[in-house]
Image 1 (spheres, rainbow, N blue to C red):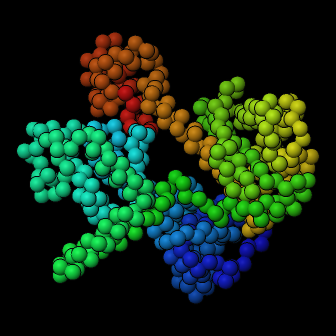
Image 2 (image 1 turned 30 degrees about the vertical axis):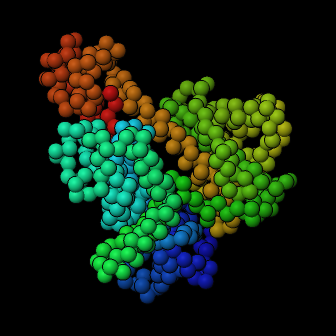
Image 3 (image 1 turned 60 degrees about the vertical axis):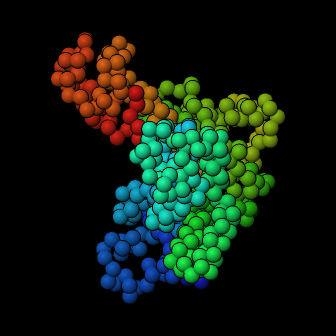
Length: 496
């Protein structure tokens, strides 16, 4: 396949991210830039490459195609780059494989008097998370202002009590509303938190006006340092807008979902009888047949339609049989559409080659589904498989039709992986001890009763376990310790 020619005039001179793929269509590098055209041009300057290090020369020689994603600012590009690197794990992004996490703001609504805290990891703990934010310094300064402005407590106690007042200076030297001595009710404090949450959700117009007036008042009083502080905080709030607008979990990838024009091109390339305005794609995710799940994503006019996404726990298949799993998922979904008299998609797509495609078709035939186009997309060479054709179709990778198919396939894969990981994490949290061979319910309960949690059990020695838990010998205690040590990184939270 001929390598696509790099034409600078076709690259937008805007901030964003660029994605490089090799001849197999695999993402090999993700980068960000304040100006995409200027940054990407540097990779294809022969004079620059002559003196480049071997890693960079190897990258450039491996580039076959590229895509760009434009955003509003360099900060948004930074966040998007981080997300794409975590999603694709490109070979040449070695320097960013440290899984760096940007700061987020966290509020626990379960607290009687919630606080504003910082976090780097978003957990499934019913807390509210805002961000992430790429500028840590600006975030700290702005968070400090917001806490003062709304009178939010900063003490670390879970439940502020009158006896804590003697050790708390916040009510004296700051602007705390002093819930510890009853100067504010829980209802009034909750209104302050709600107002803070409203700001963190991006509604900063009121705060911006307050800051502007404070800056003017301070300047008129010739308190220029104070006026400068209010100006900086206002600037910080504006700088934090990308984080407030774009939580990483909802950033869209417009270049990977080309839209209606790509739908027309796809219909032409595949010679489809009607325009595939509605495309559905299935993917399977499991580890050696365990916790098997399937995902179904729906694209309308070339864009994700997340309200129509579906996910399935595989019920009838045991062991690693992806073909049978695909057949079950397709059967269940289309049988429901037929029974409920809902419209069918104009194109059904499966992630995989001939085997997956045949499984999907067998499922449709078995339930007497009305005819519709079905294709498979194999990831290795981005080959399109069509029923009745022994040879695959290779669409131009730089074309919108190919981009659309890859976007649909990648979204189905992401959705399946996310569901599978959540099930796996829940399994780890709920039954890590159950996975130890020979544990039994009696031994498990005895261990938990003595040590209280898996976290405490991790720090115990085999000798300590065998001595404290009746019915567990030294040899089995070693087995427990070895297993917990080997699975120390499974999950962010130790299970009970």
